[in-house]
Amino acid sequence: MNWGKKFTFLGRDDIAALEEATRSAPEKREAQRVLAREVTNAVHGGEQVARAQHASTLLFGEDIATLSVDEVLAVFDDVPSTELSSDAIAGDGIGIVDLVAPTNPAARTELMKTSNGMYLVSGCPFM
Image 1 (spheres, rainbow, N blue to C red):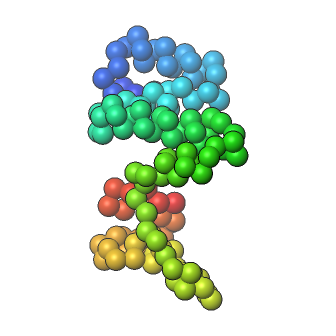
Image 2 (cartoon, rainbow, N blue to C red):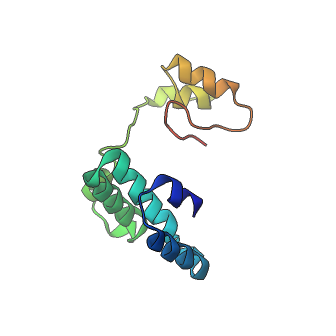
């Protein structure tokens, strides 16, 4: 719960309750959910918290097969994306650096410097 103490404005009683919840039912990941909610609220505001929680509920809390195409696509409205033509991935495919940082020279340099997988580049997490 060190993250909760450092990155939220939760009181000691709330932190203690989350620590206990984590000890008694770690599989529920309550502390992670609260941390995500608190940090998202601090950085992006309450509206984005609601959007993120709704997206999470749709994608992970329900049977996605029961959702309409529009419901699923609406989750991705705010997700940065790039469209690729089928030619870009045909044949031998596309390298991971070209895929995740096609036009950002600084990001390409950082990705190529890493030797242990990928990591945060320009604020975007990559694995």
